[in-house]
Length: 200
Image (cartoon, rainbow, N blue to C red):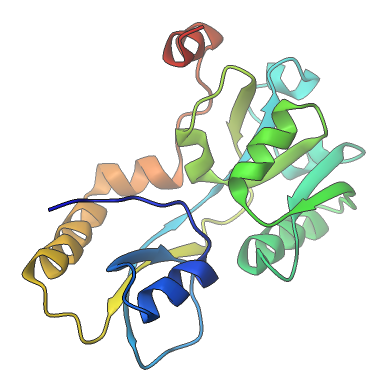
């Protein structure tokens, strides 16, 4: 058995799943499709994504109000709709009108642009599990953990391996420690640890 992991958006994964080019996908909520079976796995929170030398990186506790007046990188509303609405809604509730300097279609692009000094960002908490020596992540407790993650597979799937994978995903996601870690990762990783991870 070969496991090939690809980082793709929800729309791309659904297309591949429909064409039987992938067997399992991890997606955001989408319109029901006859070829698809889905199951809720978890809901995740958000983190602030900051260059390691940014003034806000010196603070352990941040809120969305700290984004006032800062150049912000965010999601394109037509592509990252679920993230976009959650983030913009939280900023509006806090009375913050963000200075948007760039919109992206993928979360990994946010990390790259923040590291390059283009701006700061709010991203789903899973990004904090991708440590970088150039970035600092801070939990944002004032944004509800409301973005769902679903596991999806083909409705006509018969493979025991695939169905066992879905069942294992179901069991692992139900573990309290796993759900907590994904929703609210560590507040930050010390730069020394990041350097050792990066091999620099």
